[in-house]
Length: 308
Ligand SMILES: Cc1cc2nc3c(=O)[nH]c(=O)nc-3n(C[C@H](O)[C@H](O)[C@H](O)COP(=O)(O)OP(=O)(O)OC[C@H]3O[C@@H](n4cnc5c(N)ncnc54)[C@H](O)[C@@H]3O)c2cc1C
Image 1 (cartoon, rainbow, N blue to C red):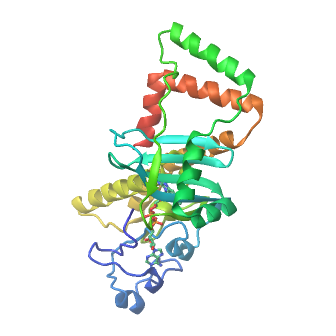
Image 2 (image 1 turned 30 degrees about the vertical axis):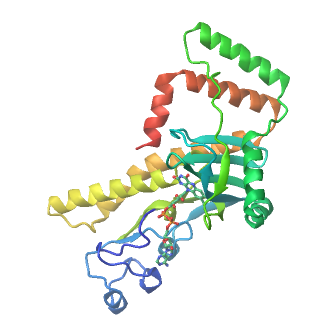
Image 3 (image 1 turned 180 degrees about the horizontal axis):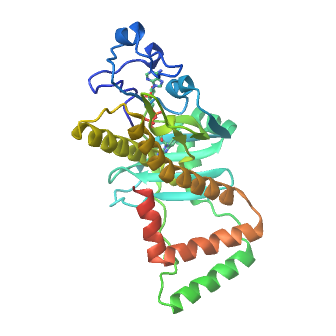
């Protein structure tokens, strides 16, 4: 996670309710700024999450919607010790459930589901929650015979072409327990700030963009923002230039939006593709996934975009 609010210099962490922003100069340097610990020539970095007060104060347009779902998170104890290096995701009729490895005995849960169901899951006693979780991971749902036939034909075609057919089935881990007090639920939504910068201000992380956790990209996008912003600002400082000059911030905004907006659209497309139950869509996504898995260059290209 990013630090809540770095105001200007790394040693200060100031609640952003104290920070005056507005008008043409943003933040305006005035007595309130000085009291809040600001100096002229500093940059306010809004790293205050999806409900960013800094973004609101910038007065920029923010495109957002709620998925009307919550993500139930928990730290899970696995039934058996293992190498545990595989991240699992299964798409249930209620949404995706993901188990992300932490160490040989523990994994992290992100279970996206309808708000009422999420609240019920939080209230369940631990043993019932674990039963519901194992059920969600292991329960078999009826499969469409048409889709089965086409995917098995695609598998055999891929095998004949010497490509991975994705048929090697690895089983998800079984869950033994939940680490005490680790269960919580957070609302899920989409958000895109049309501007990441204003004079003297830059947004990073969820303050600028918010995505569905289905691709595990939220933190990566924020880390990418911090890396690029740091690079641009240090470039300016090493060249002896004014870091508050709009050119640097503008460069930051265009670089990050060129990366973040397509990633957000891709995640949104996947979300919509996987929430539809129509046979042709199920067929297209199943075969699409098999082919993406088989084509190493395509897979590498997706991985490289996700990690930059
Ligand atoms: C259920 C769920 C599961 C997720 N799973 C994944 C995953 O598996 N992988 C992944 O990459 N991403 C995941 N994400 C997304 C990820 O959590 C976010 O992208 C990430 O936390 C954003 O970091 P951030 O620092 O920008 O914002 P936040 O983590 O929201 O941090 C903002 C901080 O600012 C502080 N703050 C807010 N207002 C003020 C104020 N006025 N003054 C001072 N401080 C303030 C807040 O207290 C908070 O500490 C998930 C999100 C959810 C909801």
